[in-house]
Image: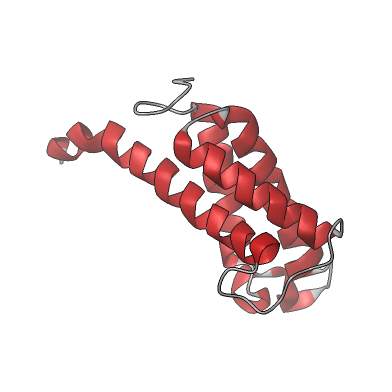
Length: 127
């Protein structure tokens, strides 16, 4: 399986790029109403989360201010999971498969990894 290690840098760039762009799209839905009927009130918690998704996702995808942007986005997804998916309920509601929080958990840990690793190659800030 040694041949796979040759793609390490490229696969990391693709992970950073695609997760950032997909995250930014979620923010564009909330903030700009892209392909969505629902737009939260300006200044609400969901609106602020959408702004973090939009700006943070673009920064992560571009590889600019990657570590702080990814760290903020990771924390935002942790809050999203605990507050909006789990809702601190007992029993089966804790599990992402039940409370539909899989994406929040995945984004949280992917962005935490990106925050720890930095932008990598093919990035604006090369941190």
